[in-house]
Length: 239
Ligand SMILES: *Cc1c(COP(=O)(O)O)cnc(C)c1O
Image (cartoon, rainbow, N blue to C red):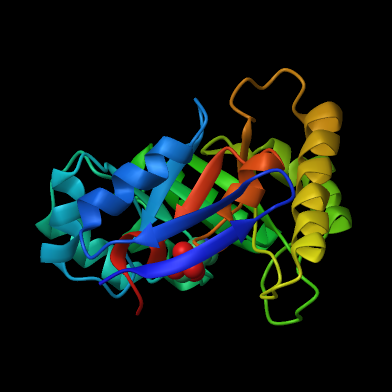
């Protein structure tokens, strides 16, 4: 059984078949990735056995959006998996997450970043983070505005945070079939990234990630400059 998805981005026009085989899906997605673009396999709601199949196919980076789900899975799966947190993170759940997480992609407030820094300092672990921006027209999606981010980056509070490292930005496009609208939102995120790099991270070699693109729009995201794509359905099938 296959599910056919047509991608048309203006430049890229191809058909992608989701196979029943997880390894094959990963293989097919990898073929589309330019050098330097990282694939995060979004394994939320997926079982340990299912994640193992992806691991056996050579996938080492996984994304989860619930703290306890990530923590429980990390305990049962190989220790060298890179776990990325991609969901809305409540400050009271930061502490259990930090020992196992490799990157928090969804930093959407100063308060949250402060809490991550505080807990990270207790375990002496520097936590790579992405700033999540609100780029969609939908009001439901979390994220900072550029003003909020700039206020944060200018603050002394931020300058004193020794245990968080800002590696770039993350965003989710509006759920729509309108390619041009999605393209505009992806370009907007890339512009935000460029502004922040220019103004605040000129000397920071780590500030280089733009996390955007999911199952239905990752080819377009890559075209718009994505460096990290977060893909669930196109690897694991529908939820
Ligand atoms: C679920 C999720 C994804 C993956 O979505 P798919 O459409 O299944 O590829 C990516 N990013 C975030 C933040 C998610 O919550």
